[in-house]
Each structure stands twice: as C-alpha cells, then as structure tokens.
Amino acid sequence: MSMLTLFLLLLWLSPSSAGTGYIDITGIRSLANSGDSLFTRPVALDISPEKKLYVVDAGGNRIIVLNRQGEVIRTVGGFGFEAEQFDDPRDIWARSVTDIFVADYNNRRLQRFDRQMNYLSSLENNDARDAALQFDYVAGCAVNSQNELFLLCRDQDKIIKFNREGQPEYAFGMLESGAEELNQPGQIDLWQGHAIVVSNSGDSSVVWFDFFGHLLGRATHPEMKHPYGLGVVNNDYLLVADPLAGCLFAIDKAGQCYPITTPEIEHPSDVAVWREGKRIWVFILDGRRLLKGILTLP
Image (cartoon, rainbow, N blue to C red; front, side):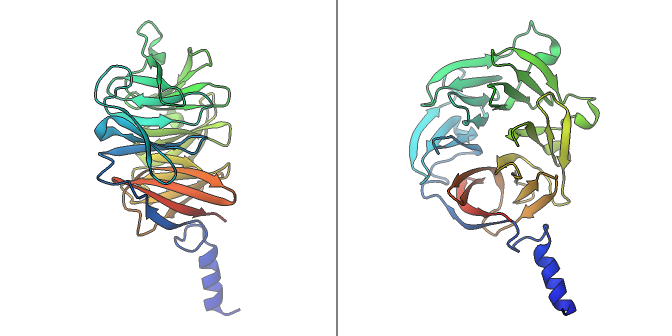
C-alpha cells in the first residue's frame, strides 16, 4: 500500500473529518412553509410520538404545530400571562405519553397541555419551599419514563427534580458544585434511558448526569462555541446545534465530539430527530428556516 493510499484511508476513517461519510447530513432542504412568512424568532423544536413538529416561536410568543411536510396544523399562544399565553417561551417537551410542556420564560412558569394543546395547568414557584427547590426563569424540562420531571432553571444554573406527584425532591448543578456545576445552560434532554443531558453554553460544553445529579460525562470540541439545541438520535449518538459555530456536532456515548458542517446549515439553534424504518430524518431550526435532511451514521 502506497503512502498516499494509506493517508487517504486514515483520513476517511477519522471521526473528526467532516464530509467524509462518517457522520453526515444529506438532502437538506427547507420545508415549504417555513421561513420569514411563518416564524418570527424560532428558538426550539420537538417531535411528538405522533410525528408532529412543535416549534417554539419566541418572537411571536406562540407554539406552531406542523406535520412532517411542514403544513401548519395548529397555532397556540400570543403575548400575555393568562393560560395559553406566553412571554418569551424558550422550549417545549412533546415526547411524554399524555402531556406537553412549554417553558414560559418571562412568566416564570411551566405550562402543561394535553396532546391537542389544550391548557391543563401551570407549575409555578412556591416561596414556602426550601431555597434550593425554588425557581425563577424556566428554560426547559425533560420527563422520564417514570413521569419524573426535571426542570431547567437558566438564571440559577440548576435542575430541580420533581417526582410523579409533582413535588420537588432535590436540585443539582448549582454554583459551587465543582465539576457538576452548570454554566448558562441552554437546553435539557434525556439520553440512553438513564441520563439527563444539558447544553452548557457558558463554558462551551455538553454535560450529562444520572437522575440523582451525579456527573456522568462532559463533551467539548475546539470548534464548539455556544452549544444550545439538543437532539437525541439513539443510545449511541446525540446531536447538538451551535448557532455561533454555524454547525451541528455529534457526540457519541464515549463523549467524543464530531462537527457536522454543510453549506446549507448556517446558524442552527435546535435539532430534532425521528426514525422512519432505516432512515433517520433530521429537522433543524436555522435562523427563521426549518430544514429537513437525512442523517448518516457509521
């Protein structure tokens, strides 16, 4: 084998090589109805078990529900502080069996809806609780298979765990937590069935904990600048949207981080994934566009 052949082979096998076919997104296109005419300032995206797309449009203080072709099914919200109104919503969790949750940031609450986006209730702070279990601005949440809710508090850099009865039990990630300390967290998600994963925008990292708040891993990359949106592919891979780096990153279960750069992706803020047979579809919020592509894994 010639030195040139060996060099090309090693380059193809390298996990960090973008565009080599190791991890890639192809066939990227904008969904027909997305863009300036639909979104004002979209910040977050989720996909329900029914394969509906839920886009948080913070600029319009609303949730826009679309089908997989990008056609609008329903719009919920508008500026305000009453039920089904928002003030700078930040994230949505649509993957629970019965409920959908919206982080209503400036209203300092988490709103709960049914599967048709009809309002059910709100989770708000209780001043009578211990200080560690109180919250202010809600950035997002994740709900595990035991119906336990993990609330992400951006201004306080912490996560509060609520049991299935809705009672807070403990908090983690706070200041002076050492290696487990959060730093300007962006989004929260579940990974591998047993881990809470958080984009740590303040120190350009992604961290994951067990359900008791013990640090399990941390991923960084020299090109990672402001990790924000999270999209779980499977137990082996996680996608991260970084609007300042202008690309997505893939993180494997060993904590290795690989940039995914394509000309179509410019300022991604969030990413979501669904499987259809052997095909893995990826939906990306990029500026005011909602992009769709096909993810290729090793």
